Image (cartoon, rainbow, N blue to C red):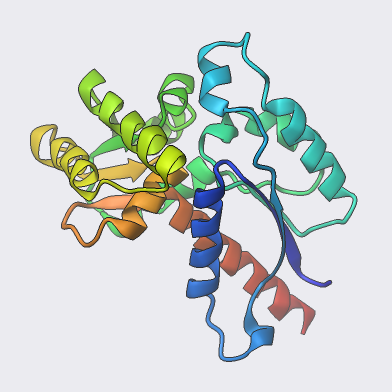
Length: 238
């Protein structure tokens, strides 16, 4: 198979399904052969990333992630996409295992803010407690010249409820809760744009209906970047 990439997914499976839907929906295609070539590794049994980040006595997700990267590298994909923000806690260690590039989801996301909201100054981040704690977005946002705003404890708790209690446990999106979180980040805390720093929040964005809040969806950015890279590869091969 030519011009293919590998998706390391399953964190969680519903979020990975949304990522695949975005890939297929946004690929400019008029026939079967126009769609992307990719291998999906839906490794659903990878231990919870937030649990480990908050308590290193919990099972370490790096071990199965590393095994997946090593195994898939033997197939020589053009690149890897990992549609899980919290897993990027291990980004440098995983990249060190292979010469094949791994797309950096937080980096790609923050790069796009200038295009979406050119005058943005204050960037809000909603995500798992693991991502908020490990700072994988902090440096990207600050280095890009923005003011970083992390949610209050109340908003962080609401976000975890949406991610874990609703999407992960029940495959359900509480649209009102999601919109309330965004309203607080934008209207109360005056964020110019809100980063959806968890793929379960991407599920909420897809299912919760229209709203007027300025958000940047990390999973959507990763899908678009994957499509762009494959199209570049195909042009080079012609």
